[in-house]
Length: 202
Image 1 (tube, rainbow, N blue to C red):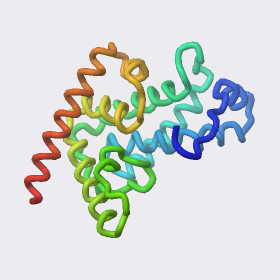
Image 2: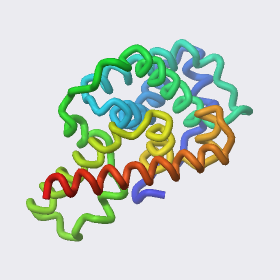
Image 3: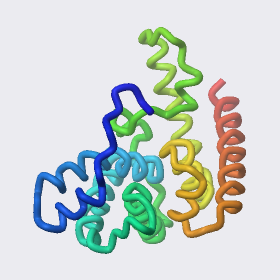
Image 4: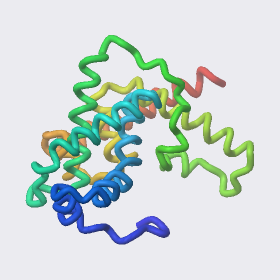
């Protein structure tokens, strides 16, 4: 658990309050999941503008479908991630022929920590360290955008959204073995692209 993390709310109760028209409950839900949804949209599209628009679309979809949330079928996080993923798939199909050209460094401050970069970061974050970190983040996001969508989403959900294999299997609607295979292949592809990109800039 992260330092300063709060006790997890009773999400079924929050959902019930949302459905009964209590706006503070909806505000609580949005605040709790906005960063996760935006991060997922940004990692997948590489565009801050697209991520903002898609995040709004996701929360409209959540609001419209909240009554269908069933706690017996999984956590609210998994349900919201599944909705987000479905919307991203639709977006990808619509814009398949249009490559995202948004600046790759948009939105990094909002998306939270990227753990592979944390491991590379020096303990004292000097200005040079921060500049190096930002360059590494741009390289990771650029490489991520080149990984095939089915492998990319598996890596994003595992390494950047910190979901377990079972949850990812539910979100993607595939067996756990396939999840593990996609994550392994996605990480290998990402490492290959990063190595190639690193050689190009040296």
